[in-house]
Image (cartoon, rainbow, N blue to C red; front, side):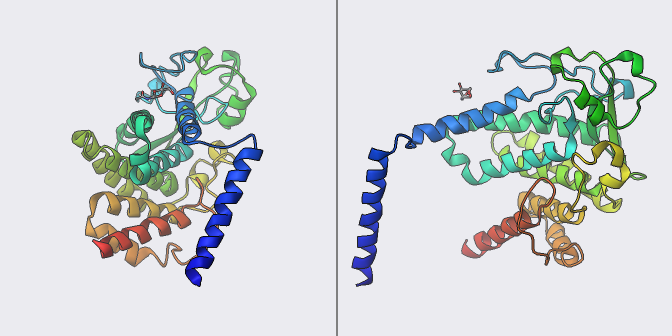
Length: 318
Ligand SMILES: *[C@@H]1O[C@H](CO)[C@@H](O)[C@H](O)[C@H]1NC(C)=O
């Protein structure tokens, strides 16, 4: 009875779907999904900052931001612009990287000829995040943005850069005014942005585990280092850098969620027990029991739960 009822509803569903495909002009084939995936990944090429390689597909883009960090004696060339502006925001860039890597870890096998493009997109970010994390000890560079369109205003405006950047509409290729860099440090902590950067580096280390083991272990090693920095000097970057990160990428959820998310990714990538112990002993204090119904660049609790649950289930079944 149950069987035939199921068969019957399946049949209805199939009939319904096939009539839908006849009557509806918009049907989706696997080719459409391939195209959508290709274009989603191509988007990242459009956002590139730095010196572009010769195999760049979007040839209307050129080199830009080639002296980012130089006024501060650090090399912060590369990475991604955030949106239609010329700001490199560390928190969303790191989160985007974590998610791209998570996509490859879970679904890379289905990405077919896009896998190379997506790992290139990840590496474009991790190369930058490595520089940002290792340039100066106990420091993470978290933002690069221009001060103004006009050299003339240089001494007047020192802070609030994103607002000034937003007032100045130009192609990144045409930027010719100074760019400021912002960092978090022991004195001005940013556990949210640092732990997210750790998550991005750890997740990406899994992506390169077999294709480039040396790079992969460098990513993991740096992830652990940045995580320890995030945990040792606790605080939100929204407090340390309020005028330049808020209201754009203010960490409204605080930094507790990122500490658990970062530790979870390092545990997933390394299997080092102390990270699981960290999650177990700090989980309660860091809000693991809180309910959240969204998962975003700001709040990672729901993602952490999925990541850890999968880890436990996979372990149990193996
Ligand atoms: C990468 O992306 C480009 C542009 O979308 C596409 O032409 C190419 O086939 C993709 N795959 C590889 C392996 O480069």
